[in-house]
Image (cartoon, rainbow over all chains, first blue to last red; front, side, top):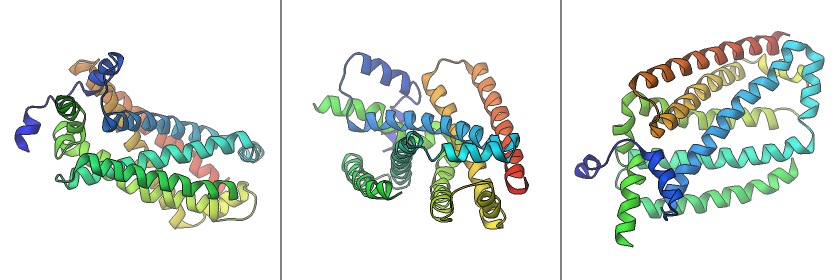
Length: 134
Length: 135
């Protein structure tokens, strides 16, 4: 195990991912999940700042705050919230998987990734009736 | 196919491999990203639960004030803000470092800027929190 990591360069991961994808190389399931984890993470970071920005309407008075809240009830925002839910689900489940892989090194990576992806598919499909209900 | 498998394992699996991420990002990086992520999972569930199932009235400033009156919800929301900022900004720093477009000095400046950004956003959040709970 130790010799495996020692042979591996520690950095340039993202740069090589981009280069290899541009060369149309097939990189495998986990590589794409790895990239998606970063993309969803960036989206969530943007969302936090946006969320603080919408909440900051309280500084312009209670009327402005209530107006923003009623805007949040509109269908466009609802669709956005559903997409946000899926982004959060993906990022948190994949993050959970990464924590487990770091804590229990002997897990079969590939099989574990597939099982987690099936679990998340089930969770996402379970979330649909909830969304319709809300 | 076998070489292809090893190849992608070499690059990407090792990024999150047994001890691989720990080796790459060090003790504080690991603690900051992974433990805060684990705690965030619970905080986020509580946060969404409070907002979507805590009240049946239409949302308004009054429901917000009532919710933030409880010390439990206050603690949840404040720690959520703090941990989400730490986790998000550390993750952002990790992405930039993986790109390797910066030199050592640039990395230090990046860290400094992100700390300043995080502290600013947290203080802004505290202001909003104050306005929302007592406004």
